Length: 61
Image (cartoon, rainbow, N blue to C red):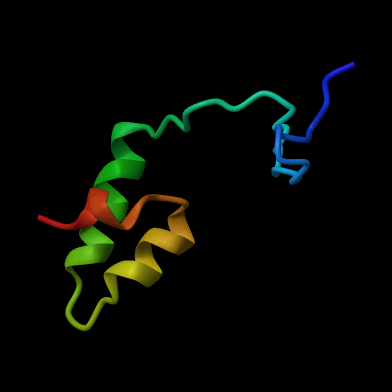
C-alpha cells in the first residue's frame, strides 16, 4: 500500500481520475454553425463556447 505522507509527515493531495476521456468530434456543419454564431452581432464568445462545449480560445482569432 502506498503512503500518502511525505518524509515530514505532511499529507499531500492525490487526485484519481477514472473513466474514459475522449476528444469531442464535431462535423463540418457543427463547426460552421458554432463559428457563425460567434460572429453574430453582440455575441458573447465565452457564452457561445460554453453553450457548445468548446474552449473559448478556439473561437478567438
